[in-house]
Each structure stands twice: as structure tokens, then as C-alpha cells.
Length: 312
Image (tube, rainbow, N blue to C red; front, side):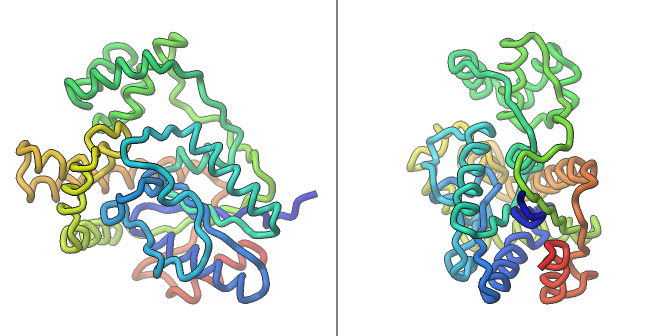
């Protein structure tokens, strides 16, 4: 029988400090002779070269703690939630086999739930998906969202107009099955001994942190990163090219936005995404929430609190 501390999940909105907490917890466990490793649950950290815009932890920031599912795909590859589920569960099982505690760090509520919960996906058809992806490239996500709204108002209400990847998937599923079910499956773990810790921040502080992070991205050379990735085929990557920030900078490089508009659109889009994800996390009463940020107890105490939830 598995113990209640087989898998730790750390979730929270963008810029809440998840990565640093995960590495700090792993360091404490490793120092106590309890091996621990980080399993990435952010769909964009898998892409090589997408570093600044994803706030990907550098080797120095990982501080020697093993990380899984970072830099495993080229930017031209297409990653699906179902494929990510398989990769993440394999990484977690590998940690368990070697006696290491996997610390899953996310990201999107959809990806986290797909990893830890009983979560099955409708089938897929490459030809149908390719046709809708071509239509997305032709008319853009907002116009395709209107097509979805005409087909299934319920599906359209559940998906943001700018989320082209989910719009395409919804249209594919509707064409395959005749319907779209926006609700997620029941809250039931598929993995052993899952403990979830969430980082909560006041909305005003989160908004400020997001704006500051985007400003740091620009100062660190984000536009040049996107320019270099574009030269390597970023526009042909159906998943990578639509990542927050990358899509907006591509529009700037293509002359359809000014640079200031691209930066502001990145801030606005990230805030909207954070609110959407927080709404999903708030529905999960299995998460133990810790106060992070300026009103929190400080990094060291936050680690202690996370370890207490874990039972260490």
C-alpha cells in the first residue's frame, strides 16, 4: 500500500513562485536523504529555445535538482495533453521506481489534472485536426472561435477566444463525436499518494508580478529570442507559436502590432490566463493553499509549511 506522500504537486498562477518552492523543497528532502526530483507540468517548458518567454528555470536556478520534461521537443513539434500525460506519468513512475519523490510543478490546471487524475481523452483524427489548424492559420483564433460558437455555444463559452489550440481541439472532437463536454472528470486521483499544495496571492500583487515579469522578459531580450526562433521555424510549430508572449511578439515582427502593443497584450493575456486557471484550481478542494508573495511568511517558512503538508 502506498504512503500518502508518494507524489507532491505544487500549483499556482504564473509568477507565484512555484518553481523556486519546488526546488527548495527538493533540496531540503535531499539533504535529509530523501531523494526528490521535479517533474515539469508546464506545456511550454518542453520546447528547446523557448527560455525567456516561458520563465524556464536555468540550470543555475534548478540548483542541481533533477528536472524532467524540460527541453525535450523542437519548436516545430506539436504537443498534445494526451501525449504530455503519458510522458509525465512515465517520469513519475520512474521516480517511484528509483525511490525518489516526484514534485510535479504546474502550470495549467488541465495538464495537472490530466497527470494526476483519472482522465481519458476523446480520440483524434489527424486529417480533421490538420484541416481546422489550417483554418486557424488562415482566419486567426478569434474568428475561429466565432465558428465554434455557431457550432457549440457551450464549448465556446468554456474556451477563451485567443486559445487557438483548444478551439481546434473542440472542433475536432465535435466533428468526431457530435458533441463537446466542457466539464472535467470527477476529482479522483489516478496516481498513488498525491498531495497538492497551492500558492495563493492577492489579485493586485499577482497582476503586479505578471507585469514585472513581462518587463523583465523584454529587458532580457525576449524579442530577440522570438526573432531567432522564428528563423528556426517557430511559425510552423502549431503549439509553440501560439504560446503567450510568443504569438504577440510574432505579430509585432510581422508588423500587425507595435512593440508596446505586443508587450501590453502579453501582460493582459497572461493575467486573463492566470484568472482562468485559478478558477479551475479553486474547484479542487484537495489542494492545501499556502499564502505566498509579499503577505506570505517568507521563503524559508513557506518551505516548512509545504513539508508539513507533505508529512515530512
